[in-house]
Image (cartoon, rainbow, N blue to C red; front, side, top):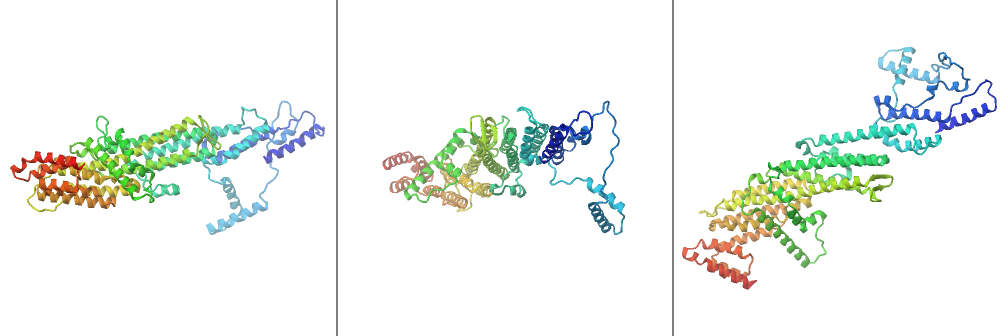
Length: 615
């Protein structure tokens, strides 16, 4: 601007000089114009940008702007034009600066440095010969990088407006510097940034083993307070880094914001597909492209999902809140009763779907590594969804077609596409958590049903040894607890094991339907199994697990004969259902002589009458 202003002063003086007739030569005087000055300035700025944007070999393809050098020396503007033209002689240097104080100081410095390095003297010619090499290397105020355009874009835009105003461009036309900048950003910079980010995402999601790699501290440290609390996949951090970088570019290059939200949508689409493939790979699929595991099929069932998400445990987990301390004792009791009702509904739903079949090994996930991978995937997706929300929250809807905040404008359809992909990622995160919740319950059926169906409870010794199926299940619970506690947040960990004691108690109580016979030693062993399960689960949930204590009381009823059992029901009131008492009567009567066993139908009738009277 200062150069243009100076040339404006010079041109004003020259025009006055020529118009006053003070020019001694004959003929017309062809002065340069302000447009020539601005053209030269644009060319100089373009050359400077070419160096600092690290265009390299692409500089030869940039727009060629006119310069004074194209028309010769500036002095030619003041000479009369010769007809037919003529050849100018070689240029002669008017001044040399070899003997200037600055040059002598540089020579002296170079000589001293040479003597220090070589240990011997040198002459002026050698020091002088080093000067061109020193000056031939350009010195930059910052490292040349394509991303420097995001720093200079705003001042360049203001400078371009000044140029176009000075040259009086029409509304739909622009100067050459504008075209150079537009072409560079649209066809070079943005494409390079997008290609680089897609390459990083492809490298982070190439292969299922690579997808399971967790982000290390070097990747999480730049996130600061927004870093996840639990381990997440490095691919999720790569996506977040790319979104943050594109967001910064959107803020600095606001006219190109619509071209950057599209790549964000494409990147999220690619990541959503890769996460879905990883999820299916871990769970396994059949030849019909159906999930192999029972928990995976249940997690996709709409009715089961709606039922589980309607329970307070899901809401509490989502909101990460606890019961308010101000509630009265009666209100807390009502809440406990509601929770017990929901646990019973969940148990009935699972039992109805399982039936009395023993699950095969292929129907459950016994690998802790696979369970850990699902947990990491869940945490990663949920964290990434929060990061996408943070991105979208900076864009406020100002109309049905344009989303705007400040000077950033992006089409509403692109924003809705990002929101839809965010919802799909959130849905997959919920599916992972529901699947883990159901998988642990499938383990209950997998280990405990064989404990009652395939084990015998008629023993001839007072052995307190725990059933091997129960022992395996206890070990499985401990390992799963350690894995989930490390991978998931506390609220999610609590959700996975919430209500598990009720389900285990229900499975064991209903198992009396499958028991052919049981003696006192078998009853003691079953009670010992339940006690070990209760102790193990109490260490996990840090609660008393009263449902398992109730299951142990149920099996202790088997010590009574049928008449004693009916008397206890009358005195203490019904604690179990008619069907459950019926199984106890059947097993208790089988321990009696044959004549006593024939009384079972009458005892069942008496049981029904007693329960009807008490209820």
